Length: 93
Image 1: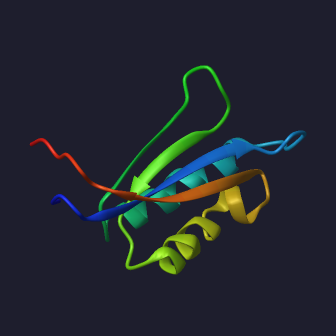
Image 2: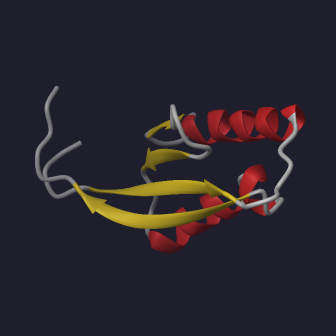
Image 3: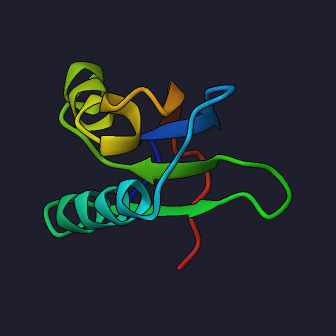
């Protein structure tokens, strides 16, 4: 990665009243694991709140939205997401 590169930041919020099963969560992790094999991706859940965040590379904003919408937690309407373009200004090895 270099200064000026753009990554995408997705923050997830659980939809009120949504019932997330173990299968939903496992499908979500399996999906993101497959996505991470094809591009830069890091992610995790919040410690004290339902939800989480991923940072990943994509061709453009539309590609990034497509990746987000295909995630089982999003496509099953268990979580909603916000997506931001993030320009790298500082990068440390």
